[in-house]
Amino acid sequence: MYFLIEHNRTTKKTHCEEFSDYAAAQFAGLQKEQEYFHAKRHEMEVVVFEANSIDDLKRTHSRYFVTGGKDDNSAGALLAIGLIGLAIYLHNKK
Image 1 (cartoon, rainbow, N blue to C red):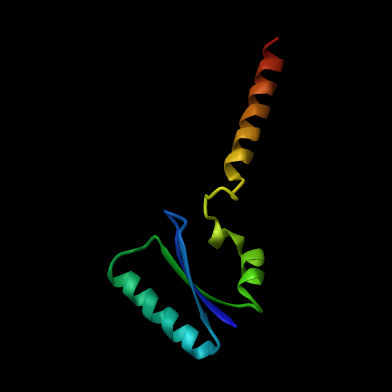
Image 2 (image 1 turned 180 degrees about the vertical axis):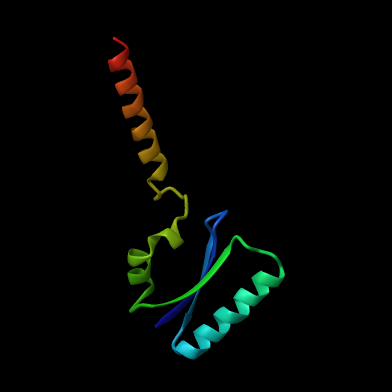
């Protein structure tokens, strides 16, 4: 399978379309790139990947599928890093 990914670098939103034909996926990707270029939408990234399934693609190219939803642990990771930094600061202040 081939997957056409349209990724907004600013909002982190991704649209994914599945193709069985590589040439069709590439042609659709080229059309999207031209559309975004003419609209001056430089925050948009258009790529075509080959993968066995969407799940495989999400595993290998996870940055395109960050949702920020309840399953996204990035806020928890940032909190943990902040707390570690605070603990180091307080420890060194003694």
